[in-house]
Structures are given as C-alpha cells and as structure tokens.
Amino acid sequence: MTIMEPAAELSKEEILHCYRTMKLVRAFDDICLKLQRSGRIGFSIPNLGIEACQVGAASALRKDDWFFPSYRDFGMALYHGVDPLDMMNNMFGNANDNAVGRQMPVHFSFVDPIHFVSISSPLGTQIPQAVGAAYAMQQRGEDKVALASFGDGSTSTLGFHSGMLFAGVWKSPVIFLCQNNGYAISLPSSEQTASESYAIKGKAYGVPSVQVDGNDLFAVRAAVSEAAERARAGEGPTLIEALTFRMGGHSTSDDPTSYVPKEEVEMWKGKDPIDRYERFLTGRGMIDAAGIEATTADCLAEISAAAKAAQAVGQPALETIFSDVYAELPAHLRAQGAAAFELKSRLGDADAGDGAFPL
Image 1 (cartoon, one colour):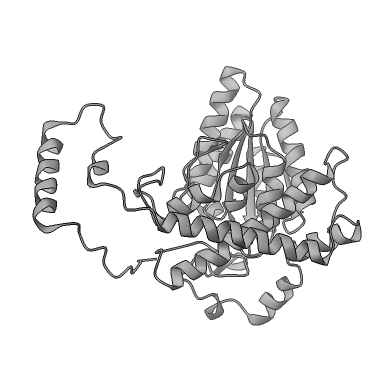
Image 2 (cartoon, helix red, strand yellow):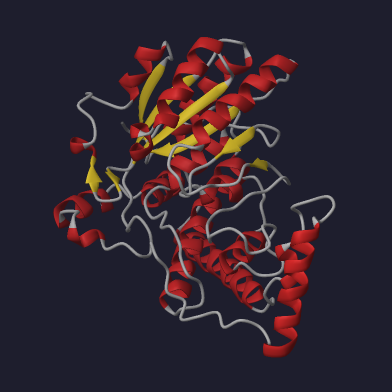
C-alpha cells in the first residue's frame, strides 16, 4: 500500500500531532533502553518500527472510548495526552507510580485523560476483557467503543478465540487490532498459523476483517475509523490485521539477531514508518529539515526530563503493601504489617538487589 491521503477532516495540526507522538514514542524507547542497559530500570518493551500502527489507531478514537492495549502501545497513551512523567513513574515503580510499584515496567494503566486499562503480561487477556466492556457499553446504550490491541502471537491464545466468538455473537462494539509484527518473540508467523492471514480468521466468527499496511498511519487510521463507525452504528466488531515489523527485540532481554535474518531487518528499515511520514510532511510543505531536527530534539528533551524527574522520586512506602486492598485491614494482615514495620525499624529498608530481571 502507498500512503493514503488523510481524511478531509484531519487538520494540519492533527497531522503534526500524530507526527510528534510517533517521535515521542521513539524517544521514550531510546531513553528506556539506555535506562535499562545502565541498570536504572529493570525492563522495557521496544516499539521501534511499530509507531504508526498504534498512533494511527489512537487518532481514530475518542478520549471516552476504552483502550485495552498490549505492552507495545506506548503511542496510544501519549497521543491522547498521558503525561510521559506518569509513564516514567511506572518504569521506575516509584512512589508516584499509580500502581505504587506493584506492576512491572511498561504495564501502564490510566483513568485520566483516557480509559487505558492496565496492561498485563499474559498474552491475549485483554481481548475478552475488551469484549466484556464493549458488551456492557452496548447494554447501557453508550456511544462508545472498545479497542483490543494485540500482537500476532496473541492470536494463538484462548483469549483471542473466546473474544472473537462472543463479540461475533453479541455484535459488540469492539475493534480487534492485530499488530502483525512478524514474530511472536522468536516464532515467525509462518510457523504460527497455517491460515493465509490473521485477518481471515474473523470469517469463522462472523466478524468482518481487513488487512492494512501497519506502517502507513493513514491506512491504519482509516481502517480503525471505519470499524469505529460500524461499531457505534450497532453493526458489531471488526478485526484489523496491520502488517508491520518490530525493528528491535521483543524486550530489552531479547537478542533478535539470533533469529531474525539481517536481510529482513534491512528491508523493513526501508519502510520505517517515521521516515515515511516525514516524506509525507515534507512533500506537502508541512515541515522542513530544520523542523524535523527541532521536533526530534524537543521530544528527546521532554522524555529525558521525565526520566530524570521519575528517577529522583523515592520508592513506595512500606505501608503501601497493605493499602488499596481491603476497605478494612484484616487482623492477620495487620499483624504481618506490624512485624514488617518492626523489622524495618531494626534493619532498615531491604536491599533492592542487583537489578537482574527474569524475562
């Protein structure tokens, strides 16, 4: 596919906002990799090469819609105004983290400014959750949709098949966005499914499906916009397969050079979604080389400042282990808490260890 013309209602300001969001995602990636390699955070998930898919999808939805993301969807939160500092607080698991250090890095969740449901590590769990939420919206008569975003590996989970089944039967207002980035960790798509595509799987469940170029922001936006329009009109779910490629590892603990052919990486570098978008912008006089350089520097500065601010915040207090769990703390947990506080008073805080991470 070639780059599609943006919808007529998309203003220059909105087009440039999509661009800056993609650059923020890449800056967030770059800085988190450095933080992990230097031992200051334990883990991160690269988004390199996937930026257009997530930002294009987010741009087609409203703030009051519901997002059920995968862990490779930084751009969805950033597009709708989530502060990079709030995301960095999660990366460090500090006292300002809205999960109070209980989640792994990259497992964001937000209720403001958007409904961004907590990312979870097990694959596919967000898919039936999105369908259930969409069914609830349907029963309430709400003009909202749910987006379930996941990778190609998640199509092999029970959650994918259960979600597709119920959404097809109920005609729930849910959009399934499969970001086919070529590999489920180290397993290539050719070894994961015998189907001619992931999109075709929707037919078995009565779910209309489409395959788009995931590195073309406008193609993804158009597909998600059409799916959202169908969902709001009561016409049910849509499955979108977005063809893209992650140009980094599955995580910061992964070495993709051990299973991804060098020639494949080089081919996809030529399809870099940000490079393509910059050609689109410069070709239409919306930005020049100086503007590209300034945007890059500005995004790196913003994410760097967020990282420094988050690193300066202390760890969650010990008592937060027991907060936000019970309205009234049971006696046995109160006793355990007293023992923990007494131990801390004698020996001080526990050693954080060497920062090694199991994944």
